[in-house]
Amino acid sequence: MQDSIFEISIFGGGNGYGESILVKIDKEWIIIDSFINPSSSLPTPIEYLKEIGVDLSKDVKKIICTHWHDDHFRGIADIFEQCHSADFFCSDCIDTQEFTNLYGITDLDPVTSPTKEISKIIDILKSRNKVFHSLRADQLLHQQNVKSNAIKIWALSPSQKSINASRMQLSKVLTQYSDDKVLPPSPSPNEASVALLFEINNFCFILGSDLPYFNDSDKGWKHVIENSQICQNKKAVFFKVPHHGSSTSYHPTIWAKLLEDNPIVGLTSYSKGWGVPNQKDINNILQHTDNAYITSSRSDKKRIKKRDKTVTNMLSELRIDITEIPFEFGQIKLSTNNLSNPIFSLELIKSAIHLNKYF
Image (cartoon, rainbow, N blue to C red; front, side, top):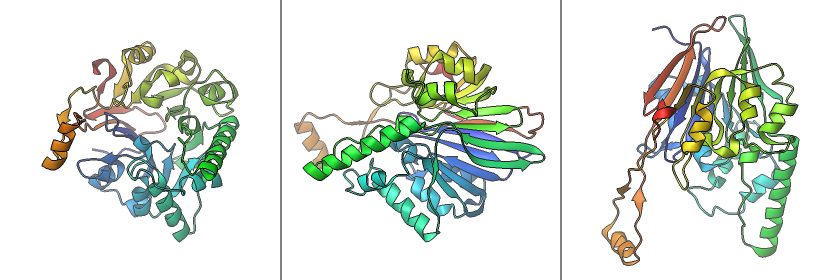
């Protein structure tokens, strides 16, 4: 089988475990976000790349953290440590002194806090004499030619208004901590997240991260639609649906203005809490395309987590019932061997399915 020259793979742990995207261009790789496989305690992108024989120290050239939600950043520092040739990219909302100070205060929760990840990344950057590459709307972060085919990668977000708002929020958080010595909730990272556009000759792919839609032309998807110079006269054939298909990131104009008719789309699920996508979210997507896929089905299966007998007895006395959501892993893979006149091959691997089979 001929090796693909271009590949996008969406990995989803389902049930809130996480989301990651791998992009192959010729023989080089880009890693976008990360999550941990609880069965192995390893970052899923690392497991996959090692399995297919990729030399992590040489072949991975870019690592992008779109935003600091735990289902997107867990394990990303370990990935960066192993990928010696890679540069590290993140939102311009993240690359600020205020953010570093905020998460340098204390590691309140070593499991879900980004403190450990950020500290390790900063140490690696210093040891390699490198810096954060910050991303904002309409910024070019990659370009190359592969067999006479021009490839460019652009950041579509965050907007300047979102950057300003994020920095102001972080400053307020730091001030409150300084006064009260109590760390308040940190700003939501979704508005600060980095959506990406891949441009290959006349073909485009959009990876939507968790970017929301606001009724404000200066931020979110409305800013991309109305103000982006990069998206002028371009429509994508592939779309990574933002925020697990949630209604907070949906609007019909995204599909009308930014996407081709009946595009191929992929998304991951998030079954914690209220759970997304719900049936309404799925209906929203399927009214625009027949080619919609998700990395795993909705799982209502739960099992009692095995634990020490003393702990079990204590939880029983307190009438606390804790169940474990099982880990499901799926991959949506789109690839081609020809960039000049591409015919894309779609593979649904492991738990990945068509979106209409989600429930």
